[in-house]
Length: 378
Ligand SMILES: *Cc1c(COP(=O)(O)O)cnc(C)c1O
Image (tube, rainbow, N blue to C red):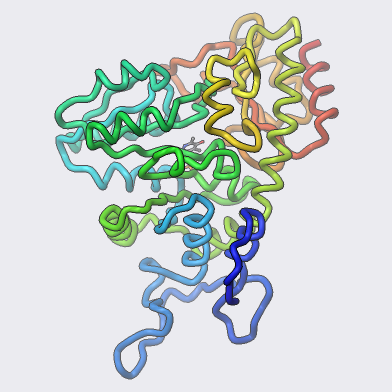
């Protein structure tokens, strides 16, 4: 397919995932299970496919499409979001230091604390909403700042462009975990991020049936290193995983827009409910990060929110169990609404309030979702 015209986001999402390489010209991209490819008589290969850990047609389509969506030159797909996160830390050297948000996705904290600390990678937890604290926590050996905005599960908003200026002043890399907003709502590279990471398990896949992750960059040297780590560490997604994520991406824009629209309606209802202590949602004017979020997010504030239920831990868990349309399960970003008592999942080190429930809004009718909450709260 020749593409001379510059299309908009949703159109590109369809075109980039379309079939390219098969002579029989299928409309949907086939799944290439072959692990290895014919070598030509001159020793070369058609299309540069050699061996499936190195590259394969399904992964190539996915990586190009992911990179294009975030406005990056290079894309690397991984078997999970955590594999993608690991590959970024593996780009650093022993003795380097990382600044991470104090409410970073819990498994990334565990990865740094339980795995990379033994490889002499240091980290400091900081409040990313406090720019003075970010700057004063920078050490001689700091190499990377890592943030998520909105954060998980408190929905704190970090000012990406302000933190990017700090990073540039001190010659540090800025990595943004863009899993929650997706590029539909937030273009982190435009805001100044050097590295964008996703768990594609969530909104990109969109149907709670595939694990995946990706890292997207513009810098050629960084891309070279990530490519090495990807093929040599080998945490690559299968062709079928790539195919599922590519398919999910074709409806990413529609889904995220609809989920965002429902989330703000649910957030407003819950904020006015007398059994709710607090709603964390950046779309609410009461949210301390609302102004920054309005500046750095477009099209909406996302399908994720968290609420503090009046009462104790057991009371919050009881409410989650009374919901009928929100499945009690971990993860997020699928077509079905989910709810989770986050503190129980995170375990003894958790800083999450004991009465917090995290909500992933799905694609059900929003009025049904609202009524479900009204009934569960009683
Ligand atoms: C789920 C998630 C991850 C980890 O991704 P996996 O695909 O589960 O490995 C990382 N960051 C955020 C913000 C997530 O929600």
